Amino acid sequence: MENPIHKSREAKIMRATLMEKISTHLGPGRRWLGGAALALGVVLGSADVVAAHTPAPVSAKASSNVSDVALVRSLPGFKNGFAHVNGTQLHYVQGGKGPTLVLLPGWPETWWEFHKIMPTLAAHYHVIAIDLRGMGGSSKPQSGYDKKTMAEDIYQLVHRLGYDKVDIAGHDIGSMVAFSFAANHPEATLKLALLDIPHPDEIIMEFRMLPELGKFGTKIDDEHPGYPWWFAFHQVKGLPEEILQGRFPIYQSFLIDYLTKDSKSIGPRDRAVYAAAYSSPDAIRAGDAWYQAFPQDVVDSKAYKKLEMPVLGLGAPGYDWLKASVTPKATNFRLVKIENSGHFMQEEQPEVVEKLLIEFFN
Figure 1 (tube, one colour):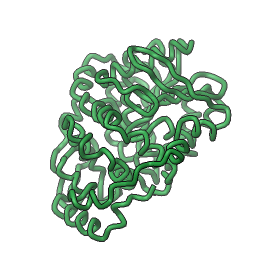
Figure 2 (tube, rainbow, N blue to C red):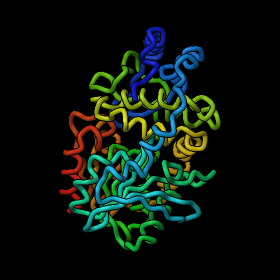
Figure 3 (cartoon, rainbow, N blue to C red):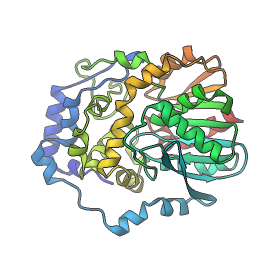
């Protein structure tokens, strides 16, 4: 899905001006993240520009092409499932034979973010890719978005499906939930893999609001470290729903382009899938709630014991953050740098990621 705001010369000039005014940088390691809601103008521009480029309504045919039914049909051997657990309904996709491997996706995506690696993984494992509480085909309740509660969702689903012990891997928000799953249910966790993001802890409370001069570009690279200002934006209750309703593809495309090395690695159909998943006010609200729960997640993390099971970290922009956060929390932690990749490594470097996961979980 091409970002419509990029077509406007006026919008490009506005973006460049705003970039210059709020040029940003967070240093390596502990300062990788931070937030400044002011930077929302980089994505949406002025109200006039946004109004001029509000996407047209999605047709019924387009919606059916990105439905979970259509998506699963493109992955032979997989099927959709639903289960009511822990007071909410979760959607999941499962297939393959072997030991059970749970995959947890992150924002602003769905289970579909793993579609490039699921067929290969399914040759070795029984793969269960789950839409988290508030995501995609899962319910979007008013509460329960702290990672401990979301981990309990996953634990109850795994138990409902008949599995006592599983391997588990998560990306982004899903990585936070996977860590909480292992911390709260070590007896059910064989091995844990964290893709690019650790669980919130005291480190996240030290992130700088304003970065250094000249280091915020349109893409992450060695000269422009990651600056996810949206961590702050999503803390504001109610506002994102008002701003993003009907405009989420604009926001989404900026984030994907910014966080990838190769923007083409997440193509038009993939972007349409994710845009459809976050198009409603409830979906936007639920995505915000994952971020608004970070302070509670930090409090919860203080009570977690050190992880004893094997833990693998796969880091790209989040390599230093993973190193600083997870090293003191796991007795058996291996960290691998994913080269030539942005944040969405499972889509940008699928062959590398699936190889490392298979080696680790075997």
